[in-house]
Length: 344
Ligand SMILES: Cc1cc2nc3c(=O)[nH]c(=O)nc-3n(C[C@H](O)[C@H](O)[C@H](O)COP(=O)(O)OP(=O)(O)OC[C@H]3O[C@@H](n4cnc5c(N)ncnc54)[C@H](O)[C@@H]3O)c2cc1C
View 1 (cartoon, rainbow, N blue to C red):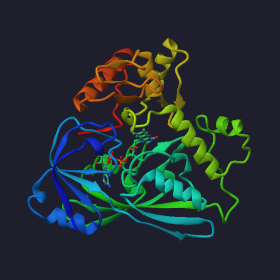
View 2: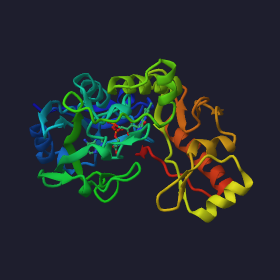
View 3: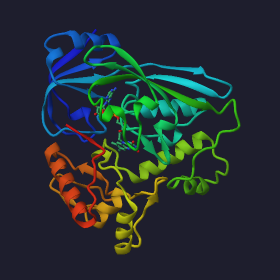
């Protein structure tokens, strides 16, 4: 049965730990709950916000509407062909628990995405990615309900228009569809020896070498990613944050050459179309923000791209810090950083 709470603090519902209130908060445990919510007054006419784990959201004020809290549960796996398995996961499941389950079963493809907080349903929203792998590589289809009509629709991967931390759900269809389930096509490593673990990115190879692992399994890669992430990123349970606050900017060659002539050490990744991706963390650090604290907020000492709530910060304080950072980066490098976090 649909459960709706009134005048609720969202402090425990967002990893920044921002203490704002919602007029209503509905716990959605089945698609029936969702249909009921969409057809019942007073909820049907209110502003709505879909919430997963709140790990990619910054609340800048109270929400005078209804928060639709996703608690859909369930998981099925079926052989797809000789060496692949299709996993259908309800969108309210925890992403990392899904990864851990797949690793325990020997299903490869998402082990590099270990320890990313949040729900499965939010993963296609920004095409989550880490350690050289993006969701787009294993995503098969996305099932979603249109909020205006209650109609179910299946989106093919192409229809999701996935890009770097982008999808159709973040733009054209923002706040229009509730993702109900995600289908992933993974490799069943029990049935094939042709699976190559992805160890080229970041410190994965270095970590495995330090453990004497020469031919890593997907479990080895998952353990490496978890250990590296724990050493680099603040745990939101201890220090409020939403991971990377900004996306890494992509600039054209002329712009890149100008920066290179001033900063020969600039880290960069050339893209297939000749443009260059520059780590936003490096730009922020060059502007002197790394580890800098302003009141209850700041840029984290180990990872400049992560803005943190040292306790009691408001969403507006964090937003203003982000704006200051954007201004200084723009002045110095002529690059306007774009937030990765969804700001409400
Ligand atoms: C410590 C830390 C590390 C992180 N590392 C990474 C990383 O390595 N890579 C990465 O990509 N991200 C990373 N993130 C960001 C975040 O974990 C992901 O974006 C995650 O997918 C967000 O899931 P969520 O359930 O918390 O989404 P929420 O924050 O609840 O929601 C995010 C957005 O998606 C919408 N949404 C949520 N669920 C649904 C749904 N079912 N249907 C439609 N819309 C929906 C919301 O309305 C909102 O706009 C990190 C965050 C933290 C705190």
